[in-house]
Length: 151
Image (cartoon, rainbow, N blue to C red; front, top):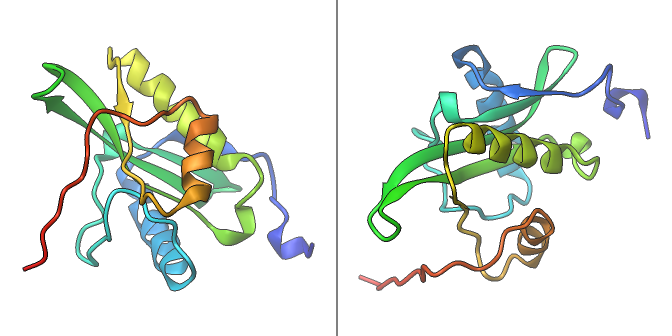
Protein backbone atom coordinates (compact mmCIF):
# COMPACT_ATOMS: atom_id res chain seq x y z
CA UNK A 1 0.00 0.00 0.00
CA UNK A 2 1.40 3.42 -0.90
CA UNK A 3 1.85 6.28 1.53
CA UNK A 4 -0.87 8.20 -0.33
CA UNK A 5 -3.52 5.75 0.89
CA UNK A 6 -2.28 5.47 4.46
CA UNK A 7 -4.20 7.60 6.97
CA UNK A 8 -2.16 10.68 7.86
CA UNK A 9 -3.37 10.63 11.43
CA UNK A 10 -6.07 9.15 13.60
CA UNK A 11 -9.42 8.90 11.85
CA UNK A 12 -11.82 11.22 13.66
CA UNK A 13 -15.54 10.36 13.61
CA UNK A 14 -17.75 13.33 14.42
CA UNK A 15 -21.03 15.09 13.74
CA UNK A 16 -21.29 16.71 10.33
CA UNK A 17 -21.22 20.48 9.93
CA UNK A 18 -22.20 22.59 6.94
CA UNK A 19 -18.50 23.16 6.23
CA UNK A 20 -18.20 19.42 5.50
CA UNK A 21 -20.67 19.38 2.62
CA UNK A 22 -18.14 20.03 -0.13
CA UNK A 23 -16.03 17.11 1.14
CA UNK A 24 -19.12 14.90 1.19
CA UNK A 25 -19.93 15.88 -2.39
CA UNK A 26 -16.34 15.14 -3.43
CA UNK A 27 -16.65 11.62 -1.98
CA UNK A 28 -20.01 11.08 -3.65
CA UNK A 29 -18.61 12.16 -7.03
CA UNK A 30 -15.60 9.84 -6.68
CA UNK A 31 -17.59 6.86 -5.40
CA UNK A 32 -20.30 7.27 -8.03
CA UNK A 33 -17.65 6.92 -10.76
CA UNK A 34 -16.79 3.47 -9.37
CA UNK A 35 -19.16 0.82 -8.14
CA UNK A 36 -21.36 2.48 -5.54
CA UNK A 37 -23.32 0.06 -3.40
CA UNK A 38 -27.00 0.91 -3.56
CA UNK A 39 -28.42 2.42 -0.41
CA UNK A 40 -31.89 3.94 -0.32
CA UNK A 41 -32.20 5.15 -3.92
CA UNK A 42 -30.20 6.46 -6.88
CA UNK A 43 -29.01 9.91 -5.91
CA UNK A 44 -29.87 12.82 -8.20
CA UNK A 45 -27.01 15.23 -8.85
CA UNK A 46 -28.87 18.12 -7.27
CA UNK A 47 -29.65 16.51 -3.91
CA UNK A 48 -27.91 13.83 -1.91
CA UNK A 49 -30.40 13.73 0.97
CA UNK A 50 -29.91 13.69 4.71
CA UNK A 51 -29.83 16.39 7.36
CA UNK A 52 -26.54 17.94 8.45
CA UNK A 53 -27.40 17.79 12.16
CA UNK A 54 -28.34 14.10 11.85
CA UNK A 55 -25.26 13.03 9.91
CA UNK A 56 -21.71 11.87 10.66
CA UNK A 57 -18.34 12.32 8.93
CA UNK A 58 -14.97 10.63 9.18
CA UNK A 59 -11.94 12.81 8.68
CA UNK A 60 -8.24 12.17 8.32
CA UNK A 61 -5.98 15.14 9.02
CA UNK A 62 -8.84 17.57 8.27
CA UNK A 63 -9.92 15.81 5.05
CA UNK A 64 -13.41 14.29 4.90
CA UNK A 65 -12.92 10.62 3.94
CA UNK A 66 -16.37 9.18 4.76
CA UNK A 67 -19.92 10.13 5.69
CA UNK A 68 -23.27 8.83 6.86
CA UNK A 69 -26.18 11.04 5.82
CA UNK A 70 -29.15 10.51 8.11
CA UNK A 71 -32.64 11.85 8.53
CA UNK A 72 -35.19 11.74 11.35
CA UNK A 73 -38.82 11.37 10.28
CA UNK A 74 -42.16 10.69 11.92
CA UNK A 75 -43.21 7.13 11.13
CA UNK A 76 -46.94 6.68 10.52
CA UNK A 77 -46.46 2.94 11.02
CA UNK A 78 -44.65 3.13 14.36
CA UNK A 79 -46.27 6.39 15.54
CA UNK A 80 -42.89 7.71 16.64
CA UNK A 81 -39.78 9.34 15.23
CA UNK A 82 -37.39 6.98 13.45
CA UNK A 83 -34.05 7.62 11.79
CA UNK A 84 -33.03 6.64 8.28
CA UNK A 85 -29.61 6.34 6.75
CA UNK A 86 -30.07 8.05 3.41
CA UNK A 87 -26.56 7.46 2.09
CA UNK A 88 -23.17 6.23 3.24
CA UNK A 89 -19.91 6.84 1.44
CA UNK A 90 -16.21 6.23 2.04
CA UNK A 91 -13.33 7.10 -0.25
CA UNK A 92 -12.14 3.86 -1.90
CA UNK A 93 -8.65 4.05 -0.39
CA UNK A 94 -10.20 4.22 3.12
CA UNK A 95 -12.63 1.32 2.67
CA UNK A 96 -12.26 -1.98 4.54
CA UNK A 97 -10.59 -0.33 7.52
CA UNK A 98 -13.53 -0.30 9.94
CA UNK A 99 -14.37 3.34 9.25
CA UNK A 100 -17.88 2.56 7.98
CA UNK A 101 -18.58 0.50 11.09
CA UNK A 102 -17.34 3.31 13.35
CA UNK A 103 -19.42 5.91 11.50
CA UNK A 104 -22.64 3.86 11.64
CA UNK A 105 -22.11 3.09 15.35
CA UNK A 106 -21.49 6.80 16.06
CA UNK A 107 -24.64 7.66 14.08
CA UNK A 108 -26.69 5.09 16.02
CA UNK A 109 -25.33 6.50 19.32
CA UNK A 110 -26.34 10.00 18.19
CA UNK A 111 -29.85 8.73 17.40
CA UNK A 112 -30.10 7.10 20.86
CA UNK A 113 -29.12 10.42 22.47
CA UNK A 114 -32.01 12.06 20.59
CA UNK A 115 -34.46 9.47 21.93
CA UNK A 116 -34.81 7.54 18.68
CA UNK A 117 -35.72 3.90 19.26
CA UNK A 118 -35.45 2.52 15.71
CA UNK A 119 -33.16 3.16 12.75
CA UNK A 120 -33.63 2.08 9.14
CA UNK A 121 -31.82 1.78 5.84
CA UNK A 122 -33.08 0.55 2.48
CA UNK A 123 -30.62 -1.60 0.56
CA UNK A 124 -30.88 -3.16 -2.87
CA UNK A 125 -31.79 -6.81 -2.25
CA UNK A 126 -29.12 -7.88 -4.77
CA UNK A 127 -26.38 -6.07 -2.83
CA UNK A 128 -25.28 -8.91 -0.55
CA UNK A 129 -22.17 -7.04 0.61
CA UNK A 130 -24.18 -4.09 1.99
CA UNK A 131 -26.70 -6.47 3.54
CA UNK A 132 -23.91 -8.36 5.30
CA UNK A 133 -22.31 -5.13 6.45
CA UNK A 134 -25.51 -3.81 8.04
CA UNK A 135 -26.45 -7.19 9.50
CA UNK A 136 -23.05 -7.18 11.25
CA UNK A 137 -24.08 -3.84 12.80
CA UNK A 138 -27.30 -5.23 14.28
CA UNK A 139 -29.70 -4.36 11.44
CA UNK A 140 -32.23 -6.95 10.28
CA UNK A 141 -35.01 -7.05 7.71
CA UNK A 142 -37.84 -4.76 8.68
CA UNK A 143 -41.56 -4.82 8.04
CA UNK A 144 -41.58 -2.46 5.04
CA UNK A 145 -41.61 -3.85 1.50
CA UNK A 146 -40.74 -1.75 -1.54
CA UNK A 147 -43.29 -1.92 -4.39
CA UNK A 148 -42.83 -0.33 -7.77
CA UNK A 149 -44.58 -0.08 -11.13
CA UNK A 150 -43.10 0.61 -14.55
CA UNK A 151 -44.78 3.48 -16.38
